Image 1 (cartoon, rainbow, N blue to C red):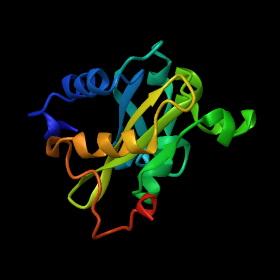
Image 2 (image 1 turned 90 degrees about the vertical axis):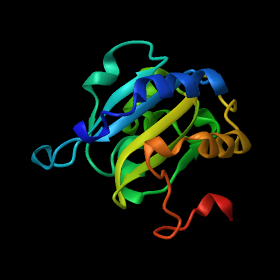
Image 3 (image 1 turned 135 degrees about the vertical axis):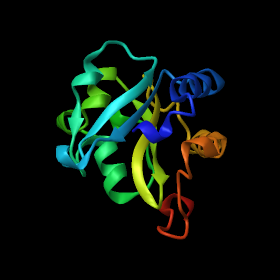
Length: 158
């Protein structure tokens, strides 16, 4: 994604990680159409290993794939309470990084989702819905409008 060269995404996710005290912050970007719009984790901070580099997702698969497909934020307060152990297989970044409490938002460019920003903790229940809302407000315009309210309705506000 060479058109995003003017902004240092790695530096910004590290700033967000420090500001909120997240254990993990990552950006998954959509790859070229030749790769069938595959999503890959490109920028990360707080990772435990390099295994995230091997994760390749299609639309609708994993956290990044679901947020990409729906264009809506995803919030999980406590994965251990909300998901069974078998569900983790469907969310490789959660399993690889040991995330228990996390949220993800779509990143838009030209009214299309081009990436997904994931933040989380390795302790269940640590990310609250209020903190997730604060995080969404803190995300700068440099990322692109993360949520186009005219296009889709945010069900988390109901």
